[in-house]
Length: 219
Length: 240
Image (cartoon, rainbow over all chains, first blue to last red; front, side):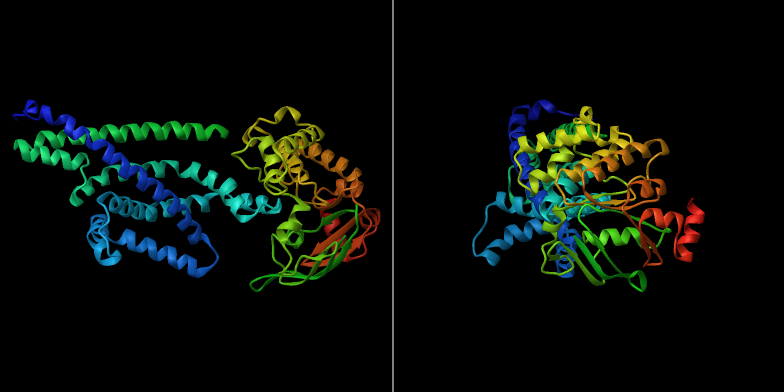
């Protein structure tokens, strides 16, 4: 095997410059996904049936079709739907955020259902309104239990973000591919991109463990 | 203070409460006893609407709480409840458990809430545990914290749903002591219990429920020495 890393050496900074793009997409999508995921999970456990249906329908759409397809529909479809071409970044935020929300809502729903129903009753008996009960009592306990699953979701979001390459965003993946095209060497830059993703995922894993340990303080 | 009229509760076809009527006066301590499955807990849980009655009326002071228009959250502020399994908030320290609802619901300042919480913790003998998480407490300590948490809302009535049933025998006494001293302060209390000795000593009145009906209602001395109904006789024979 003749690996020639020296050929791509000058281009490594260029690939590394894709990190902020990747992080930006992941961070914004994670926030959208988390907030929308909580809202959806609350709709799913509501006693009002139509709210269940809306949330279930949403989930079925975003889990039932490929992410690449959703990204393309949002990016290339925006002139037809909205009458304007949205920026690639906005399309990526939307597609990843909306998609992630579907998965996160299921994780959170499971977490909420796993909290002892006595907690709800104790809060109600104290006169605590529904919103306070959810935000201060139920969700903190649910999130502690589902933290490993949430970290999982964040990790897969980080790697999946490579898909933004197809709408022309200069993330790690796209830059590695461009370097490949310029140097006629694809194996090395893509291997290097793989290393960057791996390191990012390791950092997330460690962060997740630290947060988990802190949240388990009360055990 | 509380007037209950023809209270019924069904779960599907199962009739748990078949029409219960009684009245509870200010400062009265009422023990609710009866065999398991008699509807004692359901009856108690209807009083703060944790269970929605199927039929009948409950009046708390001048409010009809079974009326849909009544803001039940407001009523619950004045009705404290203690559960068999404590239900302390596990992610909050003892002190945080006590100050949460007063701050959230009654909008007390943190300083006021903490001051009051510390007084209550001293009363239940747990002043040294304020920064402990519930998992580190024994069952008896948990239940005393749960009582203090309910009292932190300054309720006018306290409901106890088998407060000692989940405790190891050696911890029952410390909880009953706290309840006894609470009874002496003139608190109105409804207690579902299997502690006959406690009922006899502390209660002003005993309600005996069986099969969803209020079978007997009398002063504890009469009830325990001279039960009127055959069902109460059978029950007492088994438990005493």
